[in-house]
Amino acid sequence: MTQESNDKQDSTSKQENVEENGVDSIKDTKHEADTSIKPEPPSDAVFDYAGVAPPTKKENREKHKEDIKLGLVKEPSWKEKAYGIASYVFPIVVYAPQYSWRDELFGDIVAGITVGVMLVPQGMAYSLLASLPPEYGLYSSIVPIFVYSIFGSSKHLAVGPVAVVSLLIEEALAGAIAEDDPMKEEKKLDLAIILALLAGLISVIMAIVRAGIVSNFISHAVLIGFTSGAACVIALSQLKHLLGFKIPRFDYPLQTLVYALQHIKETQPATVTMGIVSIVILLIMRYTNRWWAKKPVDPQGKSETLQKVEKWSKRIIKLFL
Image (cartoon, rainbow, N blue to C red; front, side, top):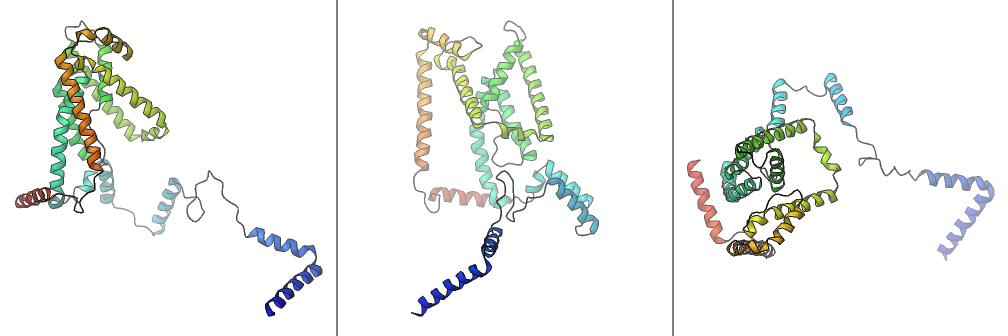
């Protein structure tokens, strides 16, 4: 009963206030309620957690200079500036002193052997794809790794020749040298070296002017189309090795396929058999690796044999360190 009486008293008091103050009191209460709601920022603006737009790089530099003048921040010495420049140009200056020889050397040795086993045949294949001698594929595979260890800043970037670059080099060299030129092979090597030098200079200039941001404007569809087209061109360029007879160079990949179908009777059975068996083995290894990756892993993540090999390898390494 007391609760009902209190509710009635509240309702009657509200009605009396409305009658006394009129419509103005209602407008005031509505205005107070509206002011409590903050307007939402535009969707295209960038704000931090406090709802304020972050300062730009220019504003940060000016604020830093003002803090140095006021004595709030200590101005870096010439040694600190030199170290900052050296660490920016040569990232090895930063991570080399932090390298743990006892803990990380074994893993790096295993990774180096794995990369070497894969890199030698891969580099030779890319060199043949670019119509160059196989040893130049080894040069272009080994030297960039040592150079990138000094100038590189990423641990996950693969450095060296790729199939698309090899194909572009082959196209450039074929269009610059006549087929009946007696000095064809020597000129091809000279032009390939000059082309590599020019590509390196352009890459250095693009790195200085920070032109890598242009890649952000390339759409995903363009990348997929380029990758798929390059894969088809590379596969058709290797038909002559798979079928066992010589196919002349054409301007369009479709002409290569038509010529191969017209001369299909010239195929060498042994060559085709070897190629098909190699492709089947690669596919089996690929899908076996996927199946093996889905299997549940031991909590340790390593078998007893692998643990023993790693244990004795670390002991041998510690003897020399």
